Length: 259
Image 1 (cartoon, one colour):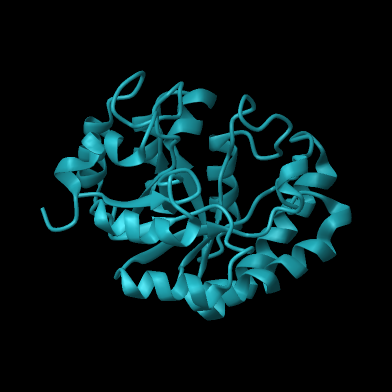
Image 2: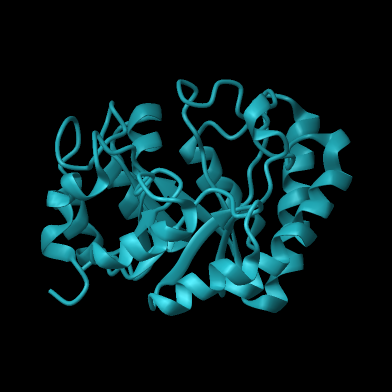
């Protein structure tokens, strides 16, 4: 059975951020993820995790000015110092929460730019080396151009090839089913091929990015396929609820913790 993690940046937003941990546990989740924790004290997050017996599945490394459209630094040659500082910013949060997966954002750059490609490889190697002593995997996630125009890493096949070529044990692919369907389709075949280097999976309906209970994708089939493939990682529910989060959890009913 898949191990679902509620994304607290998108789900349970009816509540203040720290109260979303309580709401996720009450709804039956035993793991959570979110985009960025950096405006909240790490010990406060750790306390909510411990109080609710929740596992922190994933969060992102600092992105720069997210509100202004920045999406990381890893593929930006002139932002390497900022990339290095971001690793130190994230580490106290990683240690406090016990997270074992961190997503390194590539940034906005031309995917055909050779200098950007070299900078990205360098950043991946540095980040993976930095977090390896702490038992933390570094994730890279391709994003579709409709949601993230101009993002450097915009091809799932390229990301898969890159992870395999670099051969760094704690460098993994973050496989977002929503982005893959929009970029390429053929999700199941790619999952079967890429699963050996997948460290985290995320889901949402396509095209609305709402509850995974309809539209283009047959999620019950995909969840069963993950079981058949022996995937033991987390599946992040990274979607925007149509209304109140708790009212849209019918898709999750048979997977709730303890059922």
